[in-house]
Image 1 (cartoon, rainbow, N blue to C red):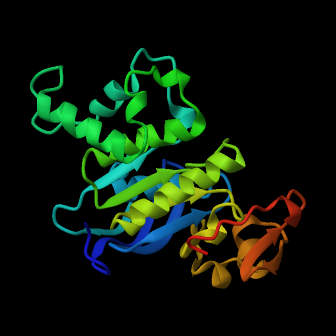
Image 2 (image 1 turned 180 degrees about the vertical axis):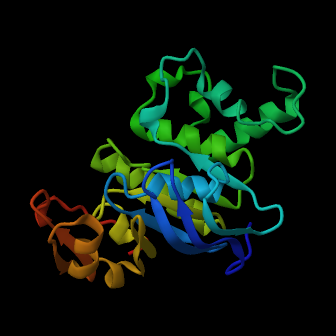
Length: 262
């Protein structure tokens, strides 16, 4: 359980580069224990790099990263990056994330019980013996969240958790993250989905190399901020008190409301 409002990680004027033009420039972000934030922006805007800076796997070339002592961070990668043919079951995949004090290649009784408990918490305990290639999109995400939760994180980072899934699975994942957040877990996720995901979160960051805007969806999902973020003109309508972004690829009748964190 995290302390509400306590800063876990603070980024100050972070700049990152992979040897060419910077992918992040002068980014400020204060991640607190009550955070539930979506980071939105086009492909190549620096969203994944931002997650890696928060995780500690990417070192910026300028700026400062301030971490609360002992802060624990879990990470869920994009499922497209996973080798789903790797010969491993759900239970084995989750237990592989437990590296605390490991000396033997097989799990002990406590580790087996801990993995079973986290799988049960996420509603997939009955899938422990199933090969990972036989999972649905929602089950895949639950398995990787279980892996991340095994380290008892205070902050969960997720890279495009709803990419390539159907509407039902998208809302299933969003409800799950909302429940985990209600239990005291800070969550930061990246997403391209402005209406299905971003508009339902309490806090958004619009990113395109630099932070274009941040705040609640109603303050951030506006035509000027979206045009600067995505480089295209977008309209924003209001439906049931929520912003709906309209572009050439979106029609308001395709939007399915999610109410819990509206």
